[in-house]
Image (tube, rainbow, N blue to C red; front, side, top):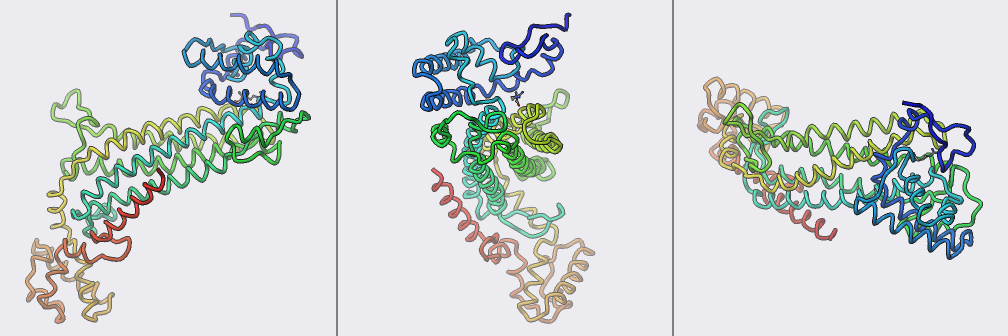
Length: 466
Ligand code: ARG
């Protein structure tokens, strides 16, 4: 294969020979960035209008450009558009196609604009709609969680620390902790959405433009909240991509931790939840297997968000200002992270809705692990024993019960009194896991009344967003 080709029609005049085929192939990004076609066309339509209003192009040329761009949009959406590898990227593919439709008018569209401010604009617009989609999906996931939590506000289960039985909690309380995690994700994504809403157009390559386009009006038409203050920064900045992938990573870590719990809880040993068959698969050799593959893939797939964040950070860290071609590599990281968030959140919500809780087994497991030992210590404190002393007394009671293969609530009051004389029959209520749960009645605690308050608050938050 020859490594020679003709010069690029859009920027090739100063070259005496075309980039080699190998270079064209290597530098082409259209396979990845064609995904930005909608934003690229919207940006160009608004920019052409601004050029017309600034009297840089005629009304006639504007009409040709806008008609041409609109028909290109239709062609792309109907799958008829022919993307050309040798035209490098989404911008030049669309501009070349426009030339075929609008002739010389198309050659005026790029006046005072560079692909450097164009790509930054496209990406910000694209992420803005991606974030809106993610916010809707987070909201959806939170709704499924709240619905499940309502059902289980009073059902007790063991709570864990270090993966060891710690204290009784309600399943609804645990579910609502997932709500809180996702709520922070929601607020992080919406904060970043506001911050990235800055329009770079008018920055051109790096130094700004001499053509007096009304940047503020252009920003308004493209739904940006503001315009960039410094043209060098505007074309060099990829903070929004770092922030997006950082937010995606945190969301990914959250979904992964939740799914880890679902994997664990759906095992035969735990048997706390059953996931619907819809979200599980079988084994090609073991006929009995029902594997939680969706939960595992949400857990595993989250690594792509972290990889994307690391990718963008390492991509950016050595780049001098302003634009460098390195930045072209940002797209695949951004899209990977975005795809993980949208596809995972969607299936996650459905899977949560499908959870069938085995409340009997959860309750049964509150009869192991000396689960109300802290409540016994609290009892002693209420009888005026200093907490550290109470901790020590209960430690000895636990040791004694374990040596007999018993739980502390199996011991008679008389037996308990051997360890502390302040213990009387009223201790029984402290040792009962259901009662212990009710006693943790501070705001944010696991008492069913508090869980219901959490749920009410959550419902208010969700309703406000509508
Ligand atoms: N495809 C490029 C990117 O994604 C567009 C900007 C190219 N600019 C340039 N001067 N080569 O970053």
